[in-house]
Amino acid sequence: MFRPALPLLLAAAAVPGLCAQKPLHLAPVVDPHSYGNPQDIRVTHIGLDLTVDFAKKELRGTALLTVKHEKPDTTNLVLDTHGLVIERIQAANGKLLSTATFKLGPEDKILGAPLEIEIPKDATSVQITYRTQPGAGGLQWLDPSMTAGKKDPYLFSQSESIYGRTWIPMQDSPAVRVTYTAIIHTPKNLRAVMSAEQDLTNRRTGTYFFKMDKAIPTYLIALAVGDISFQPLGKRAGVWSEPSMLPKAAWELADTEKMIEAAEKLYGPYRWGRYDILVLPPSFPYGGMENPRLTFATPTILAGDRSLVSLVAHELAHSWSGNLVTNATWGDVWLNEGFTTYVERRIVEALYGRANEEMQAVLGRQTLDGLIKDLPADQTILRPDLKGQDPDNSLSEIPYEKGAIFMRLLEQTFGRKRFDAFLRGYMNHFAFHSITTEDFEAYLKAHLFPLNEKAAAKIPLDAWLYQPGLPSDVPNPHSDLFDKVDAARTAWLKEGDIAALPYAKWSTQERLRFLLALPDTLTLDQMKALDDAFHITEKGNAEVEDVWLLLAIQHGYAPADARMRAYMIEIGRRKLIVPLYQALAKTPEGKAKALDIYKAARPGYHPIAQATVDGVLGVKF
Ligand code: BES
Ligand code: ZN
Image 1 (cartoon, rainbow, N blue to C red):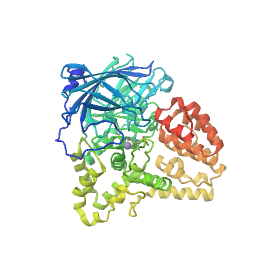
Image 2: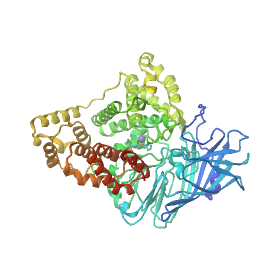
Image 3: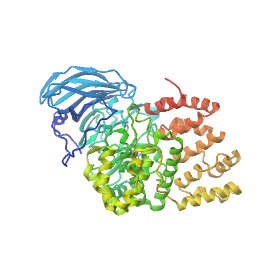
Image 4: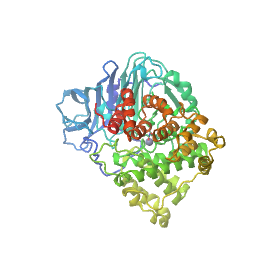
């Protein structure tokens, strides 16, 4: 069990950067989404001591930041905040605490407000006494009714991309890496968990200690508090959730240990010690979030048949692409998400076979083609300029799918053996660093391209990284299983023989393929025939349901109305609900329905999901 040897406050100042390897000399980065000045004074460690107050929906306490003077004479430390109430700031050098003067600048809607602190030249740490506000964008405070147990409240954080600053004053940039420790005080009957080393017993004390001694980007600091218990899955892996969900979660996630082994074969050793998964309440706005040592996941992955566990492969792959080697700015996010989507599919292939990988890759290609058709050209660039934009609102699946298919192209061009060796070399070389697309480009040209100069010359690298759309020579994944699905769909559309349709026997991916390519011209009788035969309008696999509900909206299939309402009220995962609101908003009747559902659903959504749906429906609160 982890117990801090020293009072954490003292230990905090003593923990060095702890990168085992010598630092690389990378060009300084300007992050357009941070006010921080790490080039002058850099925050290297954060020691949190926070009380979780459910009645006030507030975190309050102190953040003790260890700082390093990069420019010896600078005395102005600049941090990011967003909606924080700053009560007092003290500077210290070892022991002496002196009050520091500070200024909170004007608040920008996207970036929040800079916090400028005047500190002595020899100060080594700064202690900030502060509290959060109930509307903090990076926190969701759930009433007991929104949990599985219905008895206790729940709190969770979601810091990526720039919401960490809504609950911790810090230099909130993926280019700033910190170690951290935390003491979290909660109501006695609840448990706190974080993306760090922690006690794995189910003892509830109301005071919990955490330590992350590897330098991570600030968006990976994560906290959840509730009626949360632990169950081991294997040597290195385990699952946390509300007690009533633990058995189901443990069954669904049983392959986790094998996934870690498959990922290690590709990427090199797993460097974080444990890999645990926290299954959250359904309002979690994402499918998964790769918080180190503790992936946060939507309960919608618990499909009952392990059909959605590629999400775990994805979050696990981020333990390398993302957490070990991190995008230096949000414009470089494809380095996190594109690499990870590619490796997610390699893990799927290793565990579940090539045919499964092919289905995922084909679905990905289909998504990509759709995006390229629908999005304005400048939003299809792999490395966009996001200055002035909200990195979350501008995030599409482009960095995921265009990035992944670019990786696939490199694999095909240089061969799997060489490409895998390249990936391992890249992970080792840049481990514990935050890098830009240019850093990647230089490494690629130095370490992969020379292995086959002729093939390299055919890759339009500039077009891939910096131009819209898709270059002409794009890999075209193929799935024989999908050919069969397509043939079955065509036959059914032509002959109407529902008994001949093997839908019930299909996997989730085959069902998605079938539903996604149904024509716009489907009749209500055809919708009903599918539904009667296969009971698709029922609580089931959340991703299949989502596509079915979209079809229902598109075709005005009323029998799905009640289920649609329940689905949109229960689930807060942005990727699933936003397309439904968008589809409804296309007609006046649909929009009225959407507003009615949203009235009931909004209080249960995460602030990030609320902001997105507010935008879709053009409503202000
Ligand atoms: N890191 C992302 C989630 C994220 C990205 C949050 C950008 C905030 C800003 C995570 O790894 C992710 O990609 N989740 C996906 C699931 C995945 C299987 C594609 C999701 O939530 O849908
Ligand atoms: Zn991801």
